[in-house]
Image 1 (cartoon, one colour):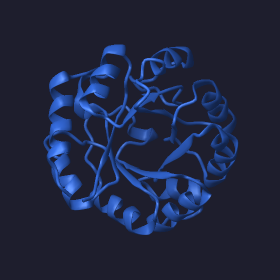
Image 2: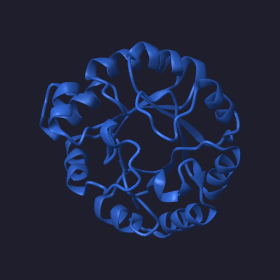
Image 3: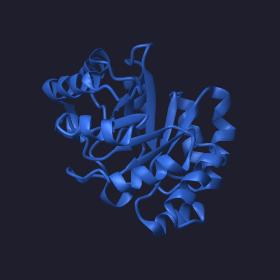
Length: 229
């Protein structure tokens, strides 16, 4: 049986951390010092406070972007389990960051851009499958296919790109994470058809940015647990 792990992201309140953890999320995500203005962005000090609330049996992920030096310093201060590179980081940046943080037990999640010009800028390859392979070979532990990127990071409603995900999934051996417009209503179909290793949900479990909904979190996790892939 294919098991799908769940990352719930954009956490900004202590009560939502506990809600998502108790509901069964595998990874809890925090947007920290992101280079583009988004409603979920946390400063480092506040992120440190919230990360301390995460139960020991849950993984922590910091979603960020920018220069390698900035990201490495953030990793050293916050010590998450995962760093999610979600801006314009290159394959060379991935290598540099991996070399600096792997000894801390931190793994890298890297987004494969939706736009071919961004893929070329970051990997040197416009082709989706080649870009994915380059990122994986550079040291990314998980690749992320997300309909959100720097240009639409704060947009409330986006549609998941199933074709892009399928191309990435067939290109690499490392786990692949799906994100963008996932809700309790469509997660079962996405999981059954595309067999992601992880799903990443943010706006699909919110009342408003940064405020998670008890009902939506429970509904999503209930659907996930009921799916037999």
